[in-house]
Image 1 (cartoon, rainbow, N blue to C red):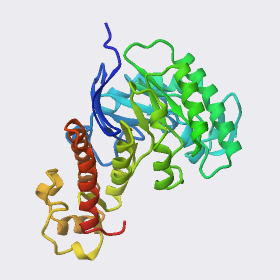
Image 2 (cartoon, one colour):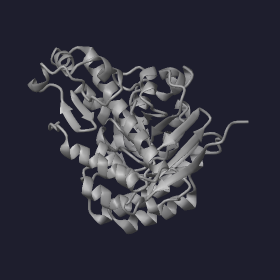
Image 3 (cartoon, one colour):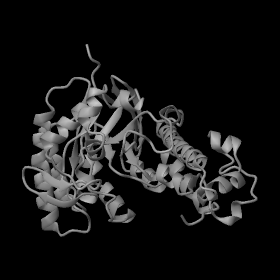
Image 4 (cartoon, rainbow, N blue to C red):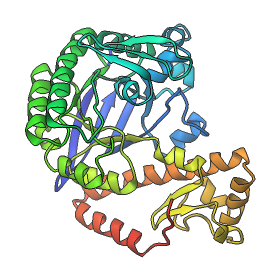
Length: 376
């Protein structure tokens, strides 16, 4: 019999929560950060290396994979886990955000979205039903319902109409997902920055019923203060006993602030993208390795870090290979950033378990305020 998908909430500290999401492919410790493997790869990293950073789950992208190499081809080759050599859980987003942000000539109707590929201009259609089909072909452990995500700022009427359509699409996604033991479908709360619209969205999603719930429509240009203002109420509108996922976030201080407000899962391209562009995250803030100040520095990126990059390579070497555009630069810097993010998650899990999260949060901000921070 297939193991069921479940969530255990094991500890709280203020609003911060620590628990475990159980899936047939393995457990996911929460709070969890999901590295982004957009096109079936975390750029500049081997899957084994990603796992060594502490990641329990990866994120794949429906929009990119449906265009290239196609979900049908991946299914014929044994599914996304086998295709990319990652046997632990995978969450796939629905493609809705990328249709909004990347594609051209987008046409939105009640049925779904028709658009032209950003790769070759070919015409495609995504609907709740098609999104569920693609994610089923990929074999995703956690599937996101198809939604519409308007960019902020937007007027209230636009946000309300978009949210209402997303809730209708959520019901269609639930119906199309069907009965799939061991797999999970997450609903996505919308409503912009409006508390009453988010409440209305949350109630609609709870009526439908999902294995987990995401706070969507944030990190789309509204700024950190506005995002935190929404997170002061939005997670509380969602079921206590189900995972809460904040989509597309973010910087380390975004993540700490989100966990403090009751979020369990996050994803972002930032640690891997920043590694490729020489931008480094440390407990004392951020470094820009291309700056000349590092060319004679024998120290590691972070003297407290235990990742292979910090154990074996100096800032001077990393500055050299970055400026020389050597491939090893992207590999080493991405490994460090992903290690930093996963270590941050582990520290937060420990602080929640010992009910010392408030002290952890204060210490986190104090370290960064006193650190050697360079603009990215």
